[in-house]
Length: 120
Image (cartoon, rainbow, N blue to C red):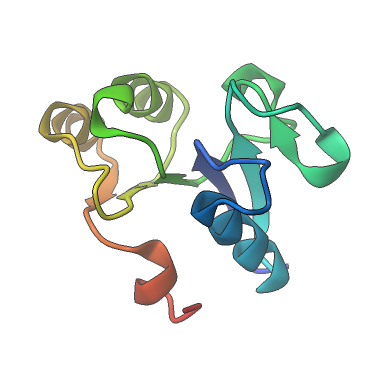
């Protein structure tokens, strides 16, 4: 496993969806990764959870794959739980959520985690 726990916020458990590909490719690349999506079917064996409270460990990095208007709750969770990095995948950036995270000392990125880390 690579260092650090990652949570993909909003990743789908539907294997045909683009967002699932991020989650699956991170796992294949050796990252310790969870999916958090209230609309997904919870499956702890596959590391898919319906809410943040269900995670067995707190992430150091969160990758957001949700519409911008849905990111405030994630930024608040990150600020309250010592998350180190918040990545807004292209098309997900929300200025207010980013500012909330920055004020909590979180490193905020408005870029594709997968590309920036050389996974894709």
